[in-house]
Amino acid sequence: MSSKEEILKRYRANVKQQFDMPDLSDIKATTYPEPIVQFVKMSEAVGGQVIEVDPDRDINTLIRELFPEAKEIASNLPEITIATRNPDTIGRARDLNGTDVGIIRGMFGVAENGCVWIPQQMKEKAVCFISENLIILLPKSQIVNNMHEAYRRIQFNDYGYGTFISGPSKTADIAQVLVMGAQAARSVTILLIPENNR
Picture 1 (cartoon, rainbow, N blue to C red):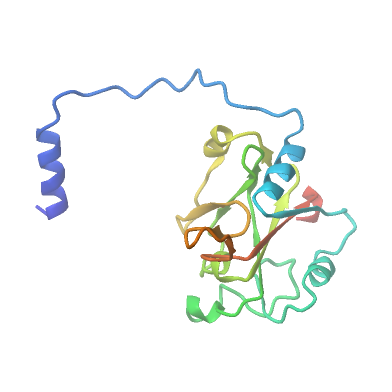
Picture 2 (tube, rainbow, N blue to C red):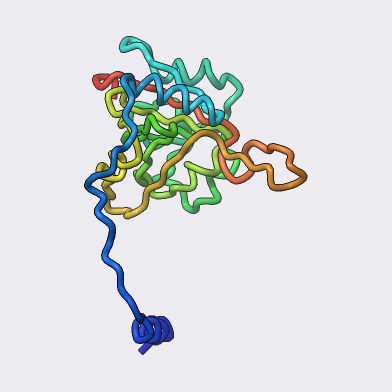
């Protein structure tokens, strides 16, 4: 028996009273009359930027306009033709160091808090965190009201990993000074794209 199993066995032997899980079927979660408007508001409140993309707008041209100085662009999305690095073909995660812009796809956004569900869709998920600037392509039709709805929609693929991202990385732990990009991207731009642009 492993030490973990031994510890769990001791815990179970000393449980004096057990409680049933609470009934969650009666929770009245917050909903919004216009989830997209709330999503944009919350995304911007946490420091992100949201751009609604016109159906006839070229995504690659738009990204170049947003980040004209970017030299290293990482993405494995087929519609991103300006990528200079592919997180599926690099040797190691650290080879993504120095990425100016990382471009990934979000599955759905949450109006309640402005976060986006990102399942791992590339060999090296470091692109989500090591990029100086992160762009998330998100279908405009895929905005849910709250985290209750979000958790019901979560699906994992073969990688078995996913995360919610809400705005750029920030911390004020040291001397109460707000630092952007402390643990991940300095900026997060969400491109709300029409379903047919995907």
